Every structure is written in C-alpha cells, then in structure tokens.
Image 1 (cartoon, helix red, strand yellow):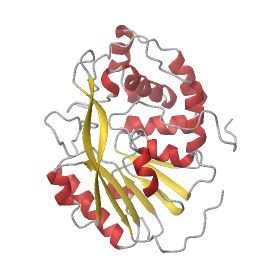
Image 2 (cartoon, one colour):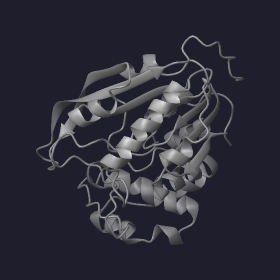
Image 3 (cartoon, helix red, strand yellow):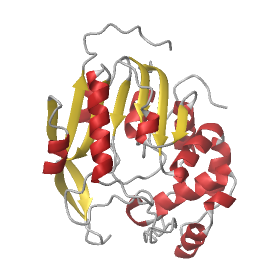
Length: 294
C-alpha cells in the first residue's frame, strides 16, 4: 500500500534511460517551478526532473501530466504506479544471463499482462547495452546484451518510491502536440525531446519513427507560442547551431557542460564533456499563483 508519507529512498527514476537528466538537476533546479497549476512533461523518459519535484515536502503542482510516444515506457509507468508489487515480483524472477536477456527481448510485449510487460521493459533497460531501449523500423527491440551479468535488475524500495511519487499523476501515451494542447498560462512545461544530433552517431532511436528536424521545428514553435501566452517553459537539447536557430526567439538560451560516457565499447568507455542548452521562458514569473494543496 502506498502511504502519504515520503518514502525512503527518495523517489527517482526506476529505469535506466539514455539522456537521463540526473546529472543536470543541480543546474535545472533554479528554473523549476515553486508552484504551478499543472506540470507537463511530454517526453518523460526516465523522469528524473519529475521525481525530483515529486519528492519535495510539498509538490509544486495541483496536477501533473506525464506522456511519451513509447508504449513500453508508458506501460511501465502505469504498472509501477498501479501494480508496483506485481512488477517487483516479475523482476525478481529474472536473471541477467545472455540467454535470459535474449529470451526476454524476443517476447511480444503486447501479449503480456501489464505488470509483466513493464518488468520486461525495465529489465531490458537494466541488462541491455548502455541503458538503451531501441526499436528498429519493424517495431522490434534490437538492443544487444550489455555484458553485465551482475547488474541489479530490481531494487524493490525504488519501485515503491516511484509508485508513491506517481500516485494521482496522469500518465498518457501520446505525442507532445496532443499532450500540450490544453496548457494554460499558470502551467509549467518541461520538454526534453530526443536531442538534435550534435555528433555523428548520437542516439535518437527511442521509437520506430525518428524525431526528425521537422518535429523539432514544430516543438520549438509550440513552446514559443505557449510561452507567449504566459506558460513557463524549460527545455533541454544539444548545443548545436540547429537548436540555437530554432530557439533564438527565447530570451534565455544557456550552454551548460554535461559529463557523459562516450564510446560504443563497454571496455573503452570513458567520461567526456559535451554541452547541452537550457531554454527558459518565464512569462508568468510575476504572476501570483495560489499554492497547490498538499
């Protein structure tokens, strides 16, 4: 049973996700809402920003909406929210051998019950290569085994803490345009899309249909319109000319260094510093908002 008291450990991402924002949280924190009517995150991914806010003594929102176009990811969020102990049970039954990984990868997730489907997805992000969940054009998962036989697939306390954080949160399967169609001036939007590739070979294959430049253009235009209407916007992306051109109308576009592991080889992977951009628009900064109820 999920209680009202804050869990230990504090809630955090329950999956391993390429492009997660844990390392960027200290830089993002000053830009995140102290209060808002509705919190929107249309590319939820690992949810590091959401979980950091959800773990505060008083949540800054009256309502929260999380969304993604990845059906496996959305199923995992819903199952962790509603059936955390079932998800834990399924995860605890899986081992991390190559044979077990390949067997799980070949399963048709649509034929599994929700908790089992969620466990398969979480398992692949933990045991597969580099925390990826990659889909080919046929809609099949093709992530190779990560060669980590000692990977810890399930931390029950983390699943329960995430379930606590997700209580009363709306989780949707849908694209950013449908998710943000009802944003109001008192709302907050955090947009962390698949990045515009800043280097050759950068990973962007989170789903069958790639998030291409046209999609980035639509997103930038939508965020600009929402900001002009008074919503508070924070977005993250790669620091490259294409992104800076897209977000030039925003007053605040800041480059920040980010440390990431670089190399396709597990053995030769090293820490390297790249740069992201933070896009920020706070037209509602002087507006008095009634604090949300606890």
